[in-house]
Image (tube, rainbow, N blue to C red; front, side):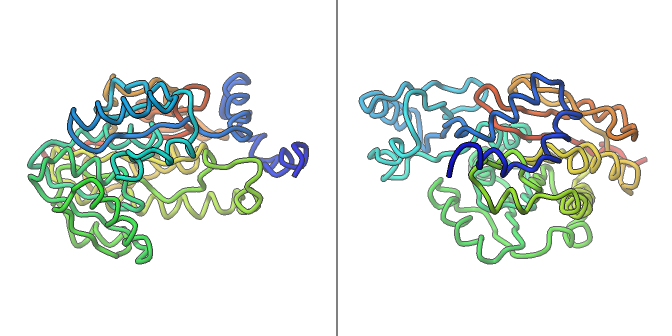
Length: 322
């Protein structure tokens, strides 16, 4: 497939929308990301000794692994390819888990501690779930749900690879938890199903053809239901992280604004930890609709560095409902 044909696969309407969401420089970075491979990052599973061994092997294989300061055990794989990383002994022995930095940031933003009761509402494929389980250090409840039964096997495999044995896996609609598990969890992750705009590539014909504003609106309705359910499961003082891998405001700031206006438990948007990667604040408005001012605390990660496109927001339930 020639380059010109590949360029035509990205919907023109999507490119026009990006030009209204971002300034020309950032929109250019996003458009360029459709034609390139995402940055290669990974986590090392194991203790300090395991990390040292993996780093040494990768250096001998021609990589220059660079540690990620805000995520222990995470590295950017400079100087090599995904295929080369998967050819290493460390990969074959399960000590390397490839994961985007943006995905890691969503899990880190939840700041899980030992003893916390944690719900991952849309858990598969499991990289973030495993990080939450490791942060618990075997203490506390970890409930990992996914509505796709087929994806539960891969979720269990990822958790086993990380040595996370205390997780309970469930196969339910995420929306149901708002009724069955009210006031149960200290931490909740809602990494919602989304249009995946940040995952699109020019040669992904099927993915590009699947994109539409109609699909975005449908997903936004589902996301609002999931976020509402997740917030209802929080204990007073509990924290929820909402994340997507899309640029669409309807699925990000629009969902937050809709839920904040309608939710029946007292919540507010928290500023995110300062140690997370730098990005852009949440939008203040979209297509003439102004959003709640607190949504500026959301984080839009954009391509151009080591991160992929992502949206992260953190919400906290008031410690007292009075």
